[in-house]
Length: 294
Image (cartoon, rainbow, N blue to C red):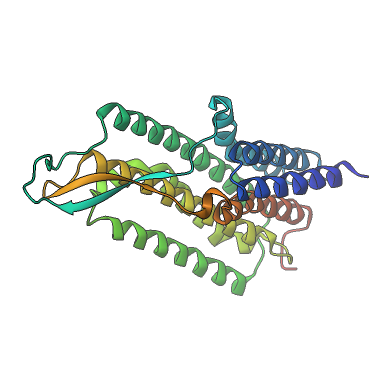
């Protein structure tokens, strides 16, 4: 069996294991399997057939950077299972009773530790941004093809995704300061914008299979979800750190059946791996063909 097929088989097996582990909330196993899948995909890119000079190294670097946050998290992990429950703020009007001070019930050390976790999440999104930029270099190095309909469709989908992200930001302005929100989520936001730009130009660089725009679409969605998670976590932290003085802030714990089966986490794990796979395979296929209409 050829090395490329072996590596793709390893990728599929490890990616499936990662999604299944995420489904049952085995986060550490899911991350380990995702790293194996990413390593196999990097190997596939490096040993595949001839490609344009900039395509192969840019793809390999982009995939490695996208996997870097997972590797860092595993390196820092103490091995203790992370709690699946999330602290969320609840507001009630002040009634003048004793203890209703409008102050957060979380102690400052907890808020500081939470802020440090947000900073680490932001650094992970910087790696995401750099990875998307490397993928952009690979796509832009592909030969240009005349595909007006596909190009219009890809650009329309890219604009639609940006509108959704913009609507999400707008919906948070009432409760959170805009500058603080953008300051917290800027790496993921820039990654989303860069991925959308790649999606907009991907159709004119793809061959007939259309794997490049499909992969770019999944990468854009993954970046948008990372932005949503980052600003959502920051919004929760800011609510605890800066509560409204007209309400009493208390701490609640959100619980759900996701402690047993987490379908959304499994879908996210599959989405995060499928995007780079489709984009890499499509880019290598497109690089092997001659430029011009096909």
